[in-house]
Image 1 (cartoon, rainbow, N blue to C red):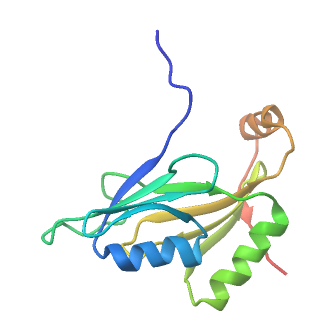
Image 2: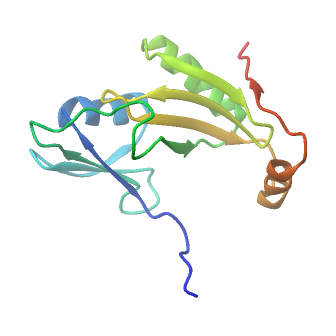
Length: 150
């Protein structure tokens, strides 16, 4: 059976392309690979052509509905715990509402919404090796806890 190699990129439709581009560049830290006014913005983490694309939705597009069909959230990995702490401060300094913070034991995460209500998880791994993170996720009795930032 064929198998995929990895998730290549995400594309989301947005109500206000300019506002969403500003949010994803100035708040989340993506770089702009290509802008196509009125159509879309292609964003990069700097290593490949694009990781996320924002497409202008139709004027009559239905808003994102919490718990509805479709994307629950996208998880964006940051380098390490120090960087996640920097994000926590950056989000607060920019008055971005944080929905919750969670220590999953294999990752530490901050959850928030973009301007259209799309869920975002900013996370760092808690283990150096992917195999150790997978073992932790499968560990019987593992429970999520609130992540506290000092």
